[in-house]
Image 1 (cartoon, rainbow, N blue to C red):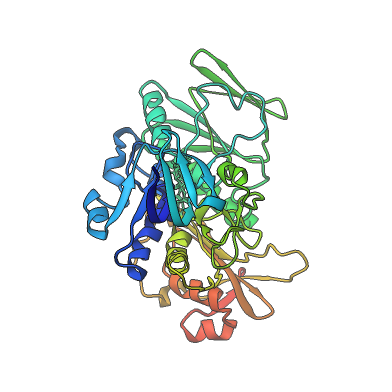
Image 2: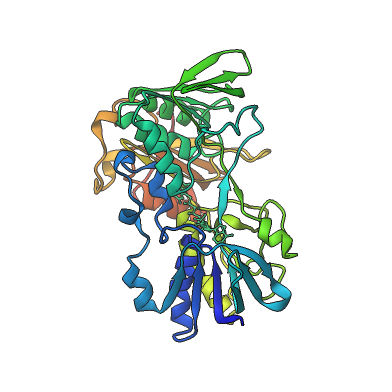
Length: 418
Ligand SMILES: Cc1cc2nc3c(=O)[nH]c(=O)nc-3n(C[C@H](O)[C@H](O)[C@H](O)COP(=O)(O)OP(=O)(O)OC[C@H]3O[C@@H](n4cnc5c(N)ncnc54)[C@H](O)[C@@H]3O)c2cc1C
């Protein structure tokens, strides 16, 4: 006998949870079921790299309390691993043999940590950071560790470095690219970020690809391509993620780096939708918490029978841990063949100082706010530890304001040497 549900949501991440909540607005009564393989109720994944690790308990970081699901009439099963999806029969099969028939399905299986092709990356004990279970493993190791090697200086690697430095772990971040966050910052802003990390006693090596990870009992080494040998009590790989496409591929859905979806979030099967980290849409196979929250109402409306296209808007990249906050949005001078001016706000004191800026960190290390202008239009912006202009710059980038309009709104720009 098969169970029957109208909406079956695979995976208990923010994609499924926010879609389930939004579905209730379009369909007040039909059965909605979320299946999650882990034992945890859906929790806030971004907290994993920002939270006080030694005291980490996912129950304190739930997306919603258990009562929320009851109130919304959303069923959620944990320890329910989906083993097979059969779109042709509108059916999903669980590891325990349970068979569920759906009308509409959301493929929300997220992503897994990427293990780069580095010799030794698969040695037992190499840590990654994607799930609550990863943090449990890290917590155990913190009990007797004094030093950590983080391989990968992306947002998550740097947030984790700050979190570990705050509990007095000596952290070295090793990044293969020639400067930090090279997709979201220019070289100068990346230099300013690096200085701030070093003020937090984090050692940063850039242009330093790792060729091998070695382990001898509790001692770890990362060997760089130039032969330098770094030692630490643990190695944490923060090399990005890969969308969880296995089940989709086996089900015959079209996949590439992620599960391919159109602008209504529909996959190659008309009754299977996808969103979040498992999805690839418009060539992009990456997502973020904030982006998923803004997509969920569209996914839900379309699953409930609507046809509403998601309007793509530039999504910010945010780093937020300890005493460092970084925000980057739009095109920060990276498109080949385009000409840019990199400008700074003429006077920061004209801005309403609604937000606290940490004076210990902001210091005299300019520039902290950069605005990128191409053909007179504001196309991108980046800020470090200064978010007074965030709302206006976000709007300017999203709506493509001319620089004059930004000036009318109180933000006149000048060249970096003004
Ligand atoms: C450490 C860290 C920090 C981050 N910080 C930020 C941030 O500051 N800002 C931001 O915007 N984004 C951040 N992100 C990214 C953000 O968390 C993700 O984009 C988002 O959580 C993805 O949600 P999702 O629902 O698509 O996938 P996931 O959260 O990965 O959820 C998918 C779920 O599916 C389950 N699953 C997988 N396979 C099966 C199966 N076969 N059967 C049943 N269940 C299954 C998984 O257990 C998982 O719970 C961070 C991510 C990490 C890891």
